[in-house]
Amino acid sequence: MILYHTMSKQQYRSEMGIMGDILDVTMDGGQRGVIVSAISRKANLSHYAVLDKCEKLINAGLMESARTDRKRLFKMTEKGLGFIQEFQRFQSLIATNRCTKASILRKRNAFCKEYRHPLSDGEITNGCDGLDIGRA
Image (cartoon, rainbow, N blue to C red; front, side):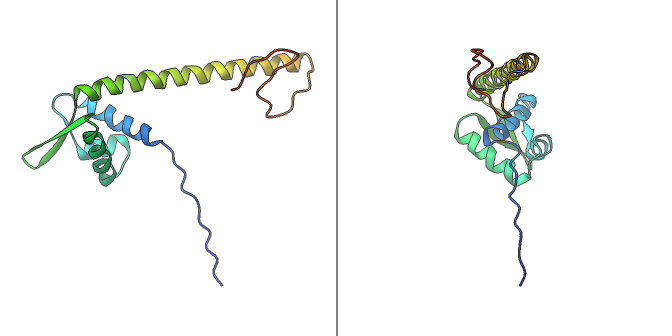
């Protein structure tokens, strides 16, 4: 009897993260546009994955494609430029928020350690004696 052990495939980026990467690469291409292989290489995706995602972005009005000679070029639309700017702003807000929460948790843990407050591992919601930091 042969047993097969299947490993779950870890997803490293979200769908939005992948779309954001594609839009970043396309935006860097400017008015000239970007070919599929350049997007594939810079966004670290297969050729077919890029085509699939680009089709979705085109349908959403964020990108457009044009054929010149044998090349298919992808370019950003005005709507796509606005979207990527808001997406980048959102990402920086998330990163700032994560840093703030991590800083609060470090300070809380140092405070609790200094005053020998029993704080269980993994407890995140309440700090020491009324030092309430909310959820992280």
